[in-house]
Length: 372
Image (cartoon, rainbow, N blue to C red; front, top):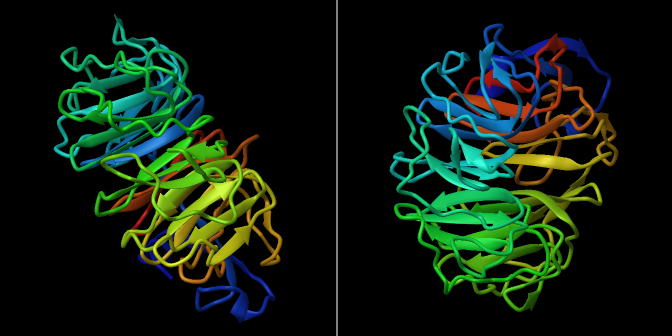
């Protein structure tokens, strides 16, 4: 069991299940404990990203921690809202990412205005004040930005847009982090929306997920591995896929996890096989995935893992090597439950439309202290 569990779980009751069903050494049902001073929001959190010692949250809300905040806020290490950071965007925020050097925080979504200035769907803001960086002018021409990922000075932008930065590049684009200039040679042109995007730890591969069936001229069932510099499809051609919702590669880059609307979360080793290493079935969609060396954390609107024969409401975790479910069982409510999970060096942060987590009232955002 990870340090996060040892620090952040409280035993509720023993359950009579076989020990072989769980990774953790004791077969107990447990729940995450959220510190009382953790900020709440009055709406939904769709995105979380760690930037230094703060967690940037984006979504659809008007207050955070009791302070006026329009759809984006910064949560400090002590769980309170940073009073100085306030970009104030006029629409939904689906994605947040930081530049490699920490000089910019990128926002993506459906907004058209940032801090009183017209700037549609994609923006860079100051990491200290949240003010719009007006020198970074790139915008998504129409429709939504759904995902952002940064690596090696590059910014990958995913969504349903058909133009970006004045160029006719749709749904997945590569930009320079410093300037916002679009790389016209990177144009995979998927035939449907890209909902999720991630980069391998070494920066050499980009993973794209969504309802598409073709990307970079190759048939791919909702998930693809692309060359990070050129956007060409690699030899990885997964046999199982679907409409992909969320994805995340492991910290060592050997495995990638993704979820689909058929209530499956797949584990693939792209360098070794086009067939999944295993799958984890849930009784509803998995909308968020965060991998660590010890565990894979999933969130969504499910209430059971039927093949493991265990109840898990909106949150669960399993062993990345074999998919065996752990005893971690905080639980969250809400129509859709959990939309985002971020593993930081000191905590596991989640966002969604929940109003309760681990049996306590906590709306929109929650933090489980410890090292995941």
